[in-house]
Amino acid sequence: MTSSRLLATFAALLLAGCNTPDLPSELASIFVEAPNFSSNSSRLEVKLPVSEIVIPVLARPLVAAEEILSTTPITSGEPDLRQEFLLVQLDRRAATDVMNYSKEAIGRHFVLVINDSAVGIMPIDSVIMDGNLIFHVEKKGLSNTQAVMDISKRLNIAALKLRKIKEAEQSR
Picture 1: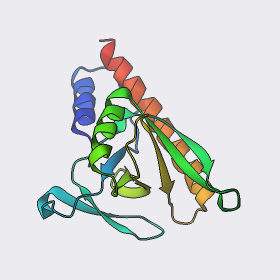
Picture 2: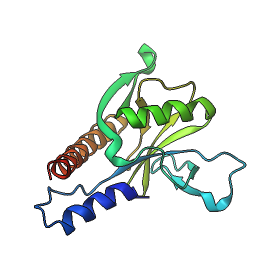
Picture 3: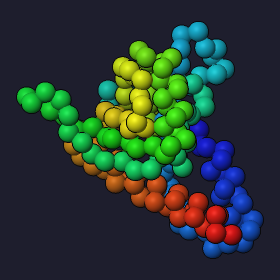
């Protein structure tokens, strides 16, 4: 599930003999729930770690790791039912892809995957115009708030490392 563009960037840096910035150990991607009519060869099944919800997703991510700019924990919901969520902010290119795709995917879900493990889900209720996705996230052994904080911290570290790699590549 790792982005081929990211792997190509890593390979180019290694072949060029550059001092490669610290590589992230965790890469997040955003997948889309597969439509019912999609073939079995074009879909994968992922399972959320706590709720154990199994979601069939399209085999290729809609958003690759290098297109995630940052994440932020947010609180949302009715005053007596407030819950923590993970806001994932995308770059302009990914935001455009999400906007275009969400027009046709209303009623399905986006799934946040770190490496090969699903960690979050977001229903697609309307067209997403701003490149901000809000995920309910799960992690075994952690409360909702702890899971959001932990995943946000880890993904922000990875995003920073990926930006450094991009900058190193562009400065060559």
